[in-house]
Length: 289
Image (tube, rainbow, N blue to C red; front, side, top):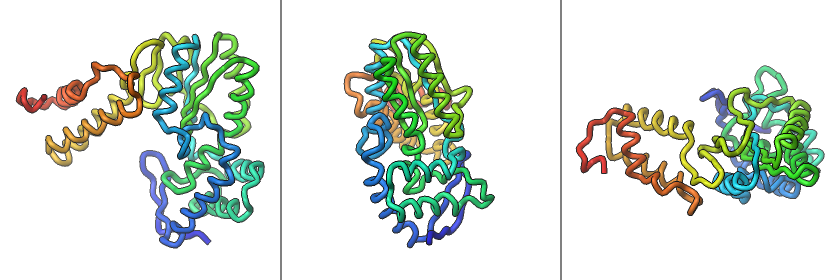
């Protein structure tokens, strides 16, 4: 039996603290669940360990951006809290997951579900990324099929995904079928966090701004989060050294794994000056550099 120490909400997500014995059990269950699902999970779902992560999704999407005229970018609204427990269990059955693992997943889902609503999943749990990959597996399959019939391409990171198409008509056909799959899964795309149109207009995906034949730059959302977190850090510590180290880590992460694709003008000095200006820090020139 799984056991909880406590639960809490943060940034709109439900988190739980499992008992030590349960945490150990879930670590072993994660390995077993991964083995059961591995043959069925799409390589186009990159957040799973071994599938390439954010940087593979961005790299692949940038290359597609250079060769396709149209793109649709979506994310699922309230993804974790919208997941239907029975659908998850049915998908596990389709993947022929071991009964013991399916039982653990059932408890993993239902134990924090105090209202017995039959929906929702905790964030930050050992099994959550794998279940997040599993839930949109029907969408992954649809897009693989449409690659042959419509010539579209697709990439997903958890609930953020992009669909590339050679023509507007083919993109519309793919989107129509996408909505059918999402309706069956009882989830909906976010009404504001989306883009549908020509790739030449550029779009935001996973913290980067993508345009055909142009280097990657931080997206407006990414820069906004950089300023917000820098402001929080500076308010807590008022330590310029810690703030500078944070901006340095952000800059290294932004460029890491994307050799030759990011803008050379986006140097650390540029990022540091961007933050200090936004925070209205009047620093000596030698500190700014």
